[in-house]
Image (tube, rainbow, N blue to C red; front, side, top):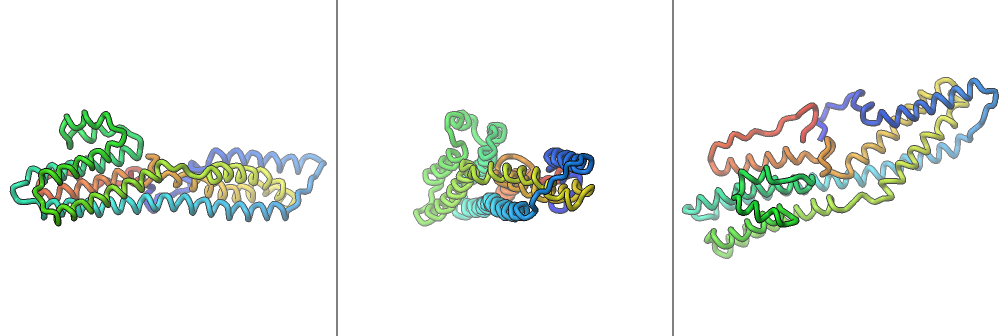
Length: 293
């Protein structure tokens, strides 16, 4: 996630620089042809204005849909943070005093779970993160499952049911928290596995590029030599809107525009380990080059 206040003109040019340069070259070519060749063409302005208005509305709807996916992903991770704190608190309060080893094991397991979920959503290997938090035998078993975080959470539920010694009331409370965690994971996987509608992924690119090609033809008669400036200003806006939607439609793609999963999972693990009343040496993630990962 790009940190607030870090957007600069250089970043904008890097953001849309390549297509903007191509369209600017096209604007210059249209202007030079119009000014140097005796054949002057007239392009009707009204259809271009209508097309531009329709395109702006289309891009706005598309970006709203993309942002909804991003915001839902962030909301689900907010649920994951809160439910993880609830789980740690329930384990600390409801487990009998003589089960300190089990409590520590469950806390470390949950830290392993959130890290495995982060890497699962980003399609990365989880084994390096799991090695210091889970037994080697369980890691070997997990190598044969398709959904590693779900398997970890399932095993956690089994340990709570079999070894905690809780009565049915306490067990129901912990089970409800585990169900909330599982539901949040399911929502994240739904976003990850459901592609952005093709109508919102392909057509806006086609329509935006077509409009940028036609735009200098409609402006050159009235703007003359200033056509590249006028057309370029409109192009910057439309290309930026197009790219914003592209960046936000996949909130777990491990790019600078994602939900900051590394920061969230580190914060969860710090809260979990703080509950053990043991030194852990972990610190919150810092902004790196204007990005919060």
